[in-house]
Image (cartoon, rainbow, N blue to C red; front, side, top):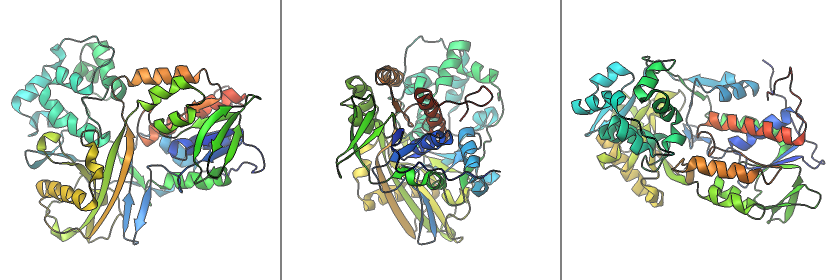
Length: 473
């Protein structure tokens, strides 16, 4: 394997491309552009790269993930980038016996069904709910331009499926509210199944893996997901400026773009600019250059989340913790959204005589939760743990992290907002946007969108030199 070379712009040269934001989208976009010899400067307002992807070793005992904790073995863009950066040798795969997910239902943990046989035997759903779901192929289709996930699921599979299975899943993955999320934007395949086959169930049967149990491996790195942005920072070296907050963007008389920094007062000139910051930040920067783009950007909401890490002595927990973790439907009247059994997923996350659990509170259905102090958050965590796992002992370790804007929400009208953004961008040549509010919230989807954005920038600069007649970065 060829190790990624250290690639650096000539610091004295004015960069052709300036990228605002050193999260995974900005770093990946910079990396792909530098592969084609483009001079790049990445500006980050915080003191470290990575955005929400951050791993931290505390007291040389606890390896914490403040953002995503893993990725699927099917995440091709991420895996490809990891290989190019020579960090694939640091990857860890979770044991086969921890793939199980649980849902707290009527005060007890129940295994989430994985496949048709599991669905029929699960204790999560009543007999009538199962019969209603199986009747789905005979439910009439509904022509609509956009529909909430809640409406779609209850219409096709029934209210109990929504309340017991979909609601906790959406809260756990998106920190979202199914009443607000657009099914077209969050699960477009389900809409396509209904459109093509008149039924989601019929569409799933026609799919490649029909009838098979889903068995994707979960992967992380020995020192956590922060390995990826840390390696990109190393590779890009002097092309990253931290503690650099951009306030505005303007077009110069010579046609180039100029980004202004207020403190200290400075400007950065470029032939192209990529904004990989959150949507609202991008809107503020672009407000003086394009009024049309501001509204659709600021109307993309972000879910607030509190992440609480706790460790307990292993001997004080009766549950074997053989699984990924558990989710809690809101009908259970518990503020805890769910917990990931971090030390069960990957080795080296805590001392061997302890367990490390990662919990989530907040989201779009409980947005004020992040305003609670650490003691109150821990109270709600322990309330949920007592119900789900019977844990009554004191934790040996607690760490809290709050995000006021953690995960972009693909709410009703999201596709129309994306279309409006693209239409506005067409009128400001040389300006590009990338981030997880476009084509998927996962790390891998974000990397793929960053790569696609790099394609667009290379086309704009006229430096595209595809090998073998194909455009590949």
